[in-house]
Image 1 (spheres, one colour):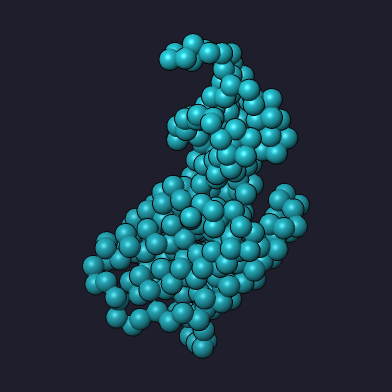
Image 2: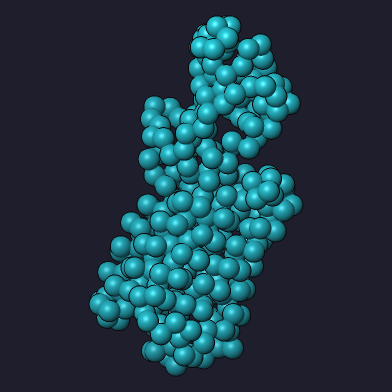
Length: 293
């Protein structure tokens, strides 16, 4: 049911918006009360906010970091427009606006909900990482490093959004250690690592799978669907059933996890008797194109 939901255009957007709210709530309820910093572009906004408050005594009715985050995403909207097209930019604009508003308006408790800093980092990292992965799976984005990570992932097949996030945050938290304290930086790192790991696991378009399809007389229709509709290459073998000794065709194709449901629907329509095997998490090299949205 969840997979079906993610393939409906309108439900995908609603799910992406829900993920944006969950992401903001995870940060403001678990990370901010501990005095720690999120990663990526929003982490930069938090550092700027803290410096403005400490140096100039600036007080605002909402969290200034959320407002700064919305403004700094404007250049990234231009990059997304050029790289990913209009539909993605529209979804990104809506989700970024909702995420920024939620970050600005959701109040951070004066007393941490979870007293233990490590537990707060783990809970916040798991929730926000899952939320960000859900947002990307829905073809949406809350801006920030997601856009840069997707752009680099599209250019280089070994680069994931989570790995790029960890690299950027290494520099950010080194600065936090110098500006604030090593304690603040270390716990912020723990939070961000967990968030990045769960992001990569929840982002279904980032998970490669191998699919073997066994059919007796519908291989041509399947081959055409995979090439034309999914823009994937396919290898076709001639085989023979071990039990029936009848000839059959074997199609081998590498997809991402999000594309599996679409392929299974095709199999039910074209050949309901087709047998298939799916192996998740395979390592793919060569000219495998990453369909990240």
